[in-house]
Image 1: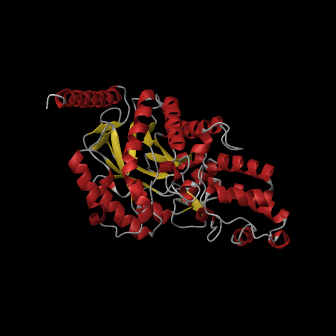
Image 2: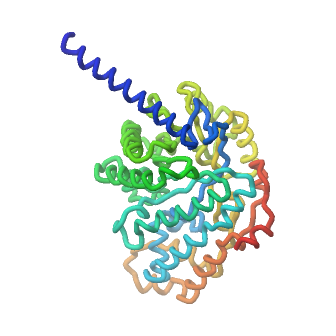
Image 3: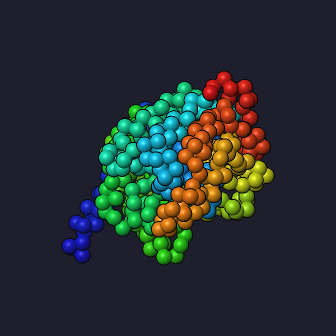
Length: 427
């Protein structure tokens, strides 16, 4: 007993210090005009309640095959990049991706979202853009150049921005969505964990004074539901604590956003909040659009008096979207529906047409790679003229002025459909 008292006393003192620091962080954010938590609500810099309504700029920094209609073909960013390299050559492919990122999200797109009535955007990012010398074609300045530009447009339009680590070093899911290597190696690699800590710290240092940046979504959909991977569940919150500590060393202003395990669905991995400026995010797809399916998140909000946020949903019919939004609005849950833009689809805010010769690209993408029969593969590939035309046409089609607005989808969200004239004025 005598030996344990000093240890218990030190532990109690440490908890008091942590609690005092957390309160100081929240008070600092409030005093300096940043979005912050107030119990179970988000409030803006003036102290007004803030209910997020937004979308995610998926397929921009983190391409996904299905958004290019490459079903049964390449799905991850790396696989899509390999296909473009194969069809255009590495030099032209590098130029294509730079042009694509310049055209996919422009000032016109951000103005479109503003006029529709959104107040926020979530930007999925790939760690490679923030790691100098990590891979050819991905340099440190490009990540910040791209984000700075969009954040500037968002500030002009009065939209908040959430930065979402969609593709973490080594991968937090091991699936195509994080562009990794078939396994959530992040949880097996101290080196990759240190890398993401360093990246988040550099991002936080860069944006610590931006009031347009709402906060940092630390890991998108970590740890799939597969039983063999749930052994990593108990590592998730400790990693979040390390990331938060690194961010707080550089930035005491911004909200930190934590997603549960199993695709941001499992909140049982969380204990009591360890920082006073935390929001918890869940994702919900392909369920009944009823309050019952989100009750456990409402219970979590009530238990800990913290804000919750639907960071992703969608990919469904307009009727389903409408019904689910009614539930979210009733329960005062902010949302970001996925995604803003994709090819040849009604389940997004806007869509663009398949380019010329794109069916040839789709068919070639379905062919097994590395078959060993180089002659057969070369014979099956689209001609260089068709491949070049297809990707050049894609660069034109993704411009907002050439996209089609999915009016039913936007109305299902109880928002306003911007006029096509606006799109034409802002090419």
